[in-house]
Image (cartoon, rainbow, N blue to C red; front, side, top):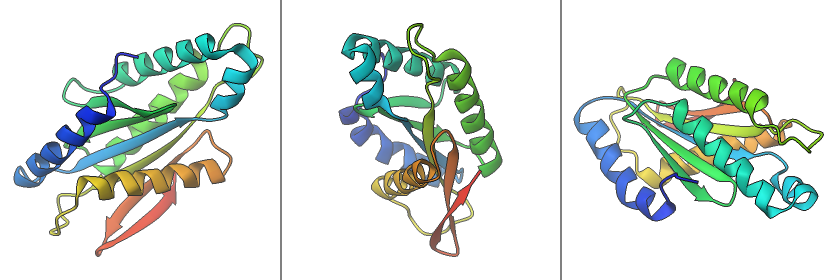
Length: 170
């Protein structure tokens, strides 16, 4: 797909989070999962499913800044790391990504629009407590599953307020 892999993420995410904390900037993490990806593979075959993942990677890479990263987390799941973002920016980027996916990610022989569920978590610079990389992934994953539970094709966010993580639909 041209995205970084999970091994890269495990090495780089902790470092990126520490830098964000040291520089007193916020850090965002998005977890993107293709809705009904198994159906695409079963209907069109794995080569077409691979093309969908390649096109998705291109959309994700074109939707972020040069300082952000796209990682293939596994299967049809991708993570985007974003340093120095606020909640509004994170939501705007997530909405733009979902809009582009709806428009651009339609295989020619597939009679349905390809959609994704997106979970986003943000560590705000105002939070004084340290947040570990695995906690950001866990909260983004929880938000992504909430987006799927609500029918997919949407964004849910996890934000930390007064030491507790809260989920919200966007």
